[in-house]
Image (cartoon, rainbow, N blue to C red; front, side):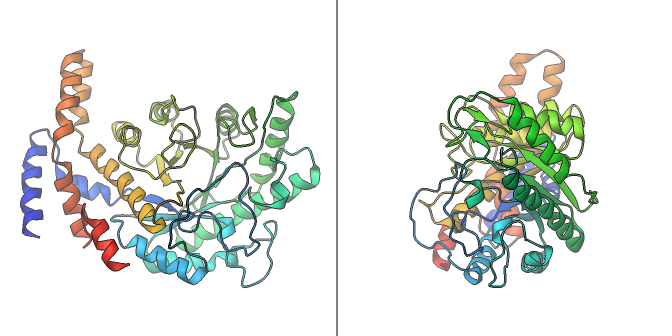
Length: 411
């Protein structure tokens, strides 16, 4: 304890030289939630009980032990996860994680009460919830199409699922008195070169318009749309492309964009995209992931892209506009530890961004002193961020960088 306080005082004085008040930074950290995805704990299996194969280009590799297999152990494990993640948290749940009370409930039959257990869990832990329709891993999605399918019965099924998901999002938000962000991602696309790229997109517009037609209070539910450059089985064409959803949200104004770090070409940077949306006053849903050569959904770490994303948000003073969520799944690692690692890495990236003396960098830039700008950027890389992080964790009575040793002793 004493060494944490001593180190923090050193860090406090160091950052003060750059015009940064570390006490204020720690207060700001408590105002920025991270939405922890629920599906890393069980490899995106859910509680439906149908044992559907993963589809939609989604794959989980690895067979590490300790995967949870039932609802009771799942919630116990999620409690353990939360006990290692300091600060303000949320949980993002998929529709397939419903409590069906032992009944066969298909996805066009889900109702708000099927998620009452999640709401009770959220209340107990003082967290918010976000929601995701599950437009994949289902017999009615096996041909690779859902909302843009050429088959009307398939479209009707998934449109109903989308409508019900929005109502559930609104119900969650109202029950918790906290806005629920309901994110829509569909796997629709063709494996090989297709002859009609417009038709599916016109059908998707029609489907989305119908799903979003019901007026749901935006204080309780906000919908986001998530694109993808390609997927397994949709290498040549994706209906819900980045350009499509960008135009849709700008034109319809009934939803916001979701940017997933892994859903772009490997040379693209999500960090570089943020200010183009923020310049027009748009809200953004963010899925932080770690793509390795493609959308591999590796566990989030404190890598360059994650740090750059948080810096962009901080420099634009936009933590109230950008809603930060996680999206990864890896069966080669201890699933709970992976969830903890990803969340803590994202939060550490946020903290490092808040500790950046952005005003000094921008001042040098405005003076066109580019040498000073890059020199300062390099200089601040060696500042004692970990001392501030240790203090933040300690305030929540959680371990700092040695958290994994504590976790291993517990399990």
